[in-house]
Length: 391
Ligand SMILES: C[S@@+](CC[C@H](N)C(=O)[O-])C[C@H]1O[C@@H](n2cnc3c(N)ncnc32)[C@H](O)[C@@H]1O
Image (cartoon, rainbow, N blue to C red; front, side, top):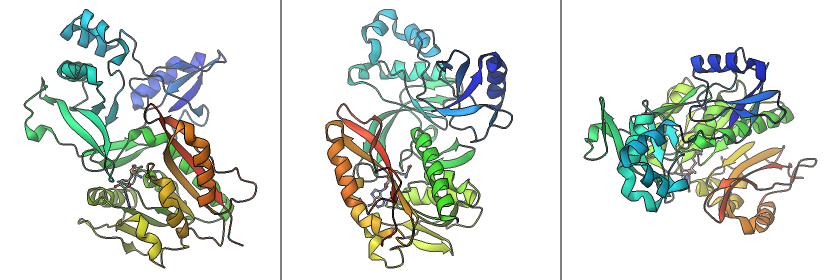
């Protein structure tokens, strides 16, 4: 998570400024930098990349955010009022103190043992977060389209909080999310989207800028698992970075939302109806497509400088056909994510290096970096690979 590194004597003023601009991440703590002279202020995912008046004077650093789950926080107070101290104490750490916001929707994972307390959990969460309109229980992403299995457990009806018998008009899940100063239309019940990938997207932006400097021109970017397009939102926000672009997905609902997003980010016309992959503008190929079939189209092969591979449970399997899309007359890059058992990371690194073309001299070996736990044994990892031109 991004934090602003501020000298101790400037913390109060900076906090006031960040609150008034809505740049401060809600639900996260200010943490010590370790040098005793600075504090790290958590930056909201919605804040722009540059914070006028604060950056570049203060450095932005990426460190793990510390959730504000102190016992005095509102949610515990409300929960205790509803079910009593004894019951709260009984389940200790199992209570869902973390959650994810997607616009005004809150998404919560509930431990099996706490299912019977789902209604009090939803009520206490809504009482402590007055901007939340809908609370949904998250049962994880499902199937090839990686859509979350979400179930409404609380919603607001005017002043009233409902925890059952929800009228359908209060369950709208199509929402606009602000990230890095951009608006992303998404619908977590119809297409994959996660706010937790913002740091990943910023790292991709930094790598893409490096590749641009190396090539001395804008990039041809290929995002064949693009979902509603959040990685492209960040890249398109950098002037002169994206030249030609391919954006496709297998999920028609994701493509419909993507067209809507591109209309705003790219300031051009895009179709209202979902279309199969086609050249919408001279430099924009967008639409519905199976990424595993792209290498069968001669126009797509050897046409791209930067390839994004974000289908973590199948990345290693799909890479051999996808790398054919890279332009091998100059350096290029693959940026991807993979889910791997911690005990098998070394083997997966070996596989990754075997399926990728030769690495560009002077760049690091492609290596899976653990980003977070996916389950008790599996880890969600990311990698970047600098690819040499074919000799
Ligand atoms: C983990 S999501 C990532 C979406 C997007 N890149 C993001 O960061 O939000 C993976 C996406 O791949 C899509 N997908 C799955 N199999 C696919 C395939 N064979 N071809 C194209 N897209 C596919 C899913 O519909 C989903 O939107």
